Image (cartoon, rainbow, N blue to C red; front, side, top):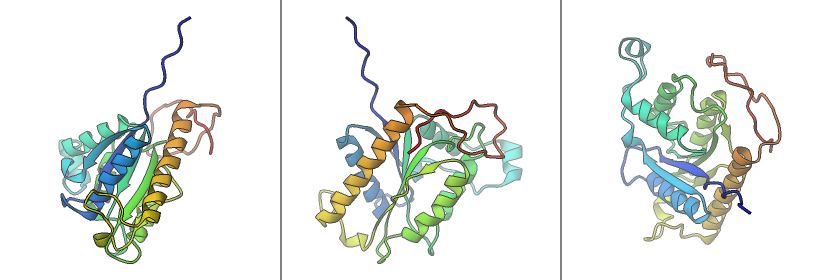
Length: 219
């Protein structure tokens, strides 16, 4: 008797949200990428430098349309089941380049953040590890309908935190990050594969598409 094929692995975009190639958050994103793959999912690593966009300007959008960098980022988000953002903290808030990318990508219809599961992580030389920036980053993502995972991960004194192999020198931090990633992936799998509830999670007033009511599990 023929059996159903197993479902494909969960796909996760892991975005290093800094322009510096060797930034601390690029290193954290690379570590999350490995943890995603080790957990049996498929990571799609990306770097903010891949998605060049001008500062958002409604006149530019009206005259020229949406930029290619925003289109590329939208396509990568849509191609994956979930999103991990490793974001720096600038002046106790979200970096301008990250907010600018969100603003551009949110102009697509349907906008791709709606119902997307997201995990936020940060690395900083400071003692708070960029955590204040992650709280600021939650606001636009949740406004757009993303389901931001409650347990964020912030790595303090990150300039001293990595081994030469790219792991975290503190085994407790390494274990906590791995557990966070694994728990997040379980939620994503439940949300995308085991549909058992019907609920209208939110109404984004700027989204005028006639999409059906979202089918998702509630966790």
